[in-house]
Length: 187
Image 1 (cartoon, one colour):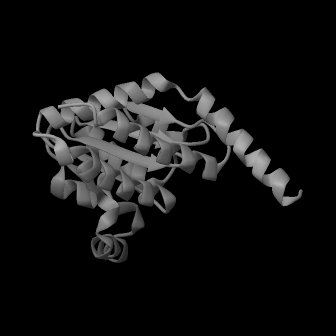
Image 2 (image 1 turned 90 degrees about the horizontal axis):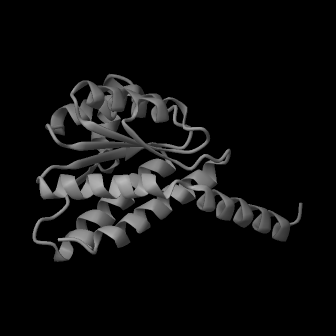
């Protein structure tokens, strides 16, 4: 396949995936974020690899980009932003514990916990969501493919529903920017 054909195929798949997204799931998540902000609670977000970068980008865009002009600001913690802490848990306990152990430090009643996993089956994301569910917190899963276990166990889900990791990650990054636009209108 030549380069142009690869580009056209990718763009076509991305457009199709965006068109099939359940926009109501995004509205629900937007409303959850607004309720959390108004109640003075936090959003704790995390993921591996590209999903970890999306979590960090989400925290930046919402904490600064959205909150800058608000009287009551969003409070987003990306568990991916403290690499030494992640490495310490990975080294001493195992990589499956890098998010759940951090959540134990921060999680309070009323906080939202958001796990991002392209496959929906990242063990460390699943473990943290299970912990937050057990504590009675609202959990949200951002997934690709068919959603995996994360889609099943999270109380709310936004699923790209595409058999392609990069397109899934593109959709998740797009969600960050959509939410930035929708949340900027509030206060």
